[in-house]
Image (cartoon, rainbow, N blue to C red; front, side, top):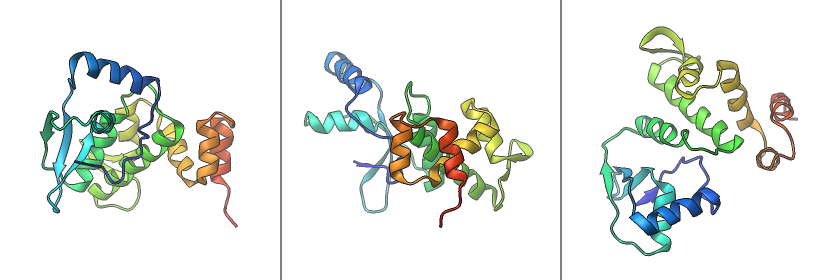
Length: 176
């Protein structure tokens, strides 16, 4: 098993990880990892990166998995959607997740602009993300704009040293 190469979500030792660890100690891994086969003979994790980290730390050799044969784009959509439901997601994680999903939806539509056919004709990819995730289309665009920030600035945002709106304004500035 190996992690998804474009996984924008941090796997860190925090309160959520501690609670997951307690649950696994009591009941085992209840939710199977979702993986996909990749050409070099390995399986790439789509969902279950935190469980996999704990499994490796405890040297657990067997873990329940669901194997799905998915394209790269469908893997990205599944990975993003399976992680956006988490209770706490940093600004940067959400920003890069929305950007990944937006890029895939635009690619799947065959258009370069953010117009995409998805159930309803001429629906923009931003609108689809908005409906799926509960943020307004404008808020989705703001999050995506954060991906233009340098890593140090993103960290300041995640650490709440700077606020969301000023970070969006900084992201809109041209680099020189």
